[in-house]
Amino acid sequence: MKARRVTILRKGLLVIALPLIYQALFIGLLLKRQSDLSTAQGWAMHTKDVIEKTEYIFRLLVSTQSDLRGYLLTGKDAFTEEMDRDEVLLARQFDELKIMIKDNPSQEARFQEVLESAQARLEYQHLVREMMRKEGTAHAQEEVKNLKGKDLMDGLRTDVESFRNEEERLDAARIETLQHSTITQNLLLVGGLIINVGIGALAAMMFSREIASRIKVVTQNTRRITNGETLPPLVPGSDEIRELDEQFHLLADNLKSARLRERVYQEALERRATELTRANTDLGQKNQEIEMFVYSVSHDLRSPLVNLQGFSRELGYAREDLQKLLNGALTAADRQRAMGLAERDMNESIHFIQTAVTRLSSIIDALLRLSRAGRVEYHPVRVDLKPVIHRIVEAMQGTIAQRGAEIAVKELPPVWADPTAIEQIFANLIGNAVNYLDAQRPGKIEIGSVEREVEGIEKPQTYFVRDNGLGIAERYLPKVFAIFQRLHGNVATGEGVGLALVRKVVERHGGKVWVESTEGVGSTFFVAFPAEAQLSPLPEVAPRKERLNVPVPNK
Image (cartoon, rainbow, N blue to C red; front, side, top):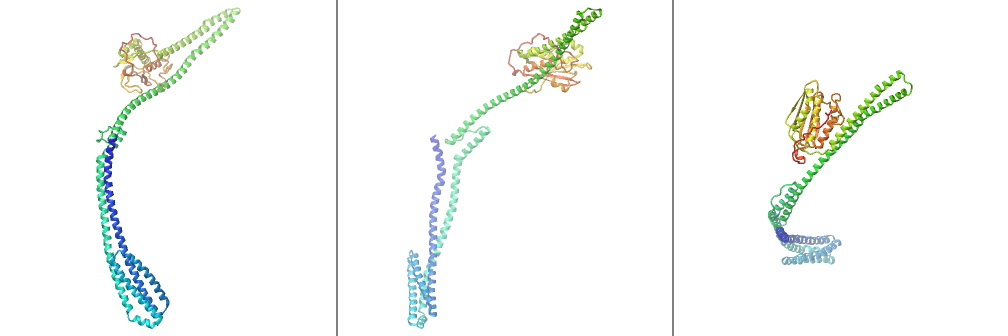
């Protein structure tokens, strides 16, 4: 690990060191040129100052000459006072100028000449002032007229011009040096910038070749991992980038495994959710069925109970009347009346009581059959349906002939179910189709299979029993499979439990049963069973031979 980090560190240091070394050299050279430029600027400014100082001194000397003339013409002391102030100022300016040119020996010599000429001129002015004070204005003016002062001033002007010309020559040379330094510095900056860009490009190329291109691959791998894509081969090298890419490959493998596990868990969860939804739906249907069942049972049981109560009361009344007759002396009319009570009223009441008890017994038997359908243990096997259907049709041949019906049995693929339950289901459906045929037209019944999707059942095996009978009104379709619901009670006898029993048995097999019907046209009952793969694999056995004594159900 350490060796790898040293490797990438060296690469990074090499990429960084090249620009840094150049920058250090460039900055050093730039500082040197900046120093030279500053020196040239200083000398140029110094020369300007010397020239300005020289001109100022000369103006002061000219001012003293003017003050002297004013004094000669007016005799006012204000001019002498002004001359004294200028002389003091001149002394200070000459001292400053001497300091400024001490670095230039040739100018020091010229400065000395200017100083001596200036002192000679000032001494002459003092002489004129003294002559005027002692000898009068005339003598002083006479002294001035001999032009000695003019000669001194001309000599001073010549010395000053010589001094200033030398300074101006120095100024021109120093300005040229300054301009040369400025141009050199500008060229250095431009060249340095170009070289800096070149070194930067070289460093960037080295970085891109050694590091950036591989980092780009690693960065793209992060997006590939996020999108679940396959990663390319590992990047070349033996540094931390290679190690990071190895970790990303390991992470991608782990995420792939995690996604597979997540998919398995998700599918399992979806299956559980589907099963739970189906269970909730079934529970809701069961609750609705229970409510309808309780209502139907209470309604159907109430009628025979009312009959029992009413006719039992009639028997009581008849018994009281008969007892009164027997307690008294019987006449022929009383004896005739007693015979009527015993043979007519009491016998009729007993008949109705027996009828009500028989009805109660039928209802209880139907409830027991439905209860047994929910508790019986089924053994699903592969059942060949055609023999089963033929047995059912043969058993109903008398009723079929009586109704003048025609039954067509189509292709029926095998089904995985309990053989007895299958026979019970189709016996009820075919019996219903026969019983509720329309007497106004020839009856036709068709039994076959169909391929169609059924919600909640994978790869269902679906069968149908179709008739052209009376049909069912749309408003009664939701009640078809409810217990004790007989929609055509005047057509056939029964308790109305057959279709409820069919639904219970089919649902016990994990299937579904439903009806499509049009009143006056006919009905089609569909039964869907799960595929073989959804049932527990059991050894195939032949269907049971015994017949069930199931009463023909009613719609």
